[in-house]
Image (cartoon, rainbow, N blue to C red; front, side, top):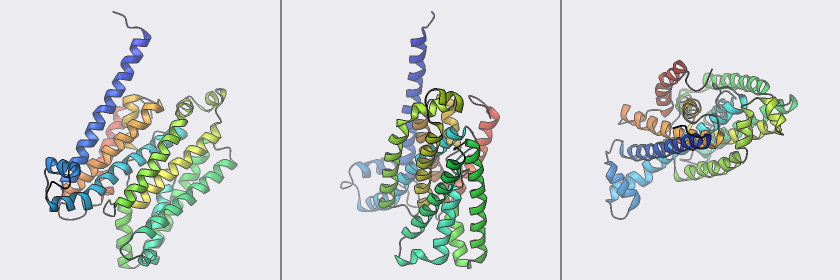
Length: 347
């Protein structure tokens, strides 16, 4: 029996939706396990019951889940989705599978901003609050974006110019971070290094609300241009022949990517590979169609960071293991295996 083109297309779309359902379930299970794992062990059933009916369960479980673990688990999902979506779109507008928010120097700029606040003690103005570190990191990230924006606008926003400007900023801010580390005291150096490693420990319901709001605003704005971004993969000339203003599109998406990255990094520090590995897997599974590629990248990013959070707790059950180290430990061999497979895309 020979299937028609319509039937073949329907089968492909059905398979893509099955991927969404499967990974959504995996994210939910990882979310529950992430909450249950810790110094005070809770069963998955206890976690689920506490979330659904907090007044029925015991008070100790309520405090552990609602005040400590639930915000961190939600931040892992939101940060994972934000960085993965940012990575997916950077790879699209730059037409480079090795690109990520780090390529543009935005994460390094956030690191420098946080280091400035930690060295000069801006966060001591509000006792017990990390708001000035996050604000400083966010502001420096936007300054990095504005620098790339001005350079790209002057040079017709070509992907080569954006990459070169990003690399220049990356090395600049890394050098400035090293300078601050060199001149800081031992206590300041310890704070800077721990922040640069990345951690979910400062997560709160306030940071969850901010990241959720930014993600919910950015995703629909990106969705408006999904067909244009899909067409961009055909090449600049073909995209222009379809009536797409390629330069304007790149700069607009670059803004959304910068805000997503800045909001994520400013709260949890520099976490690597989240913007690199999940988009690669999504591309292998569903291809370049942005309608499926971006949402699946978000799901895979959430799953990746949730698993990293679980792994970091297992490695150091009684203490705090930086999640940025966990993502690198998981991400490096996984990324190398993806490169060796070379399935579904070419480097």
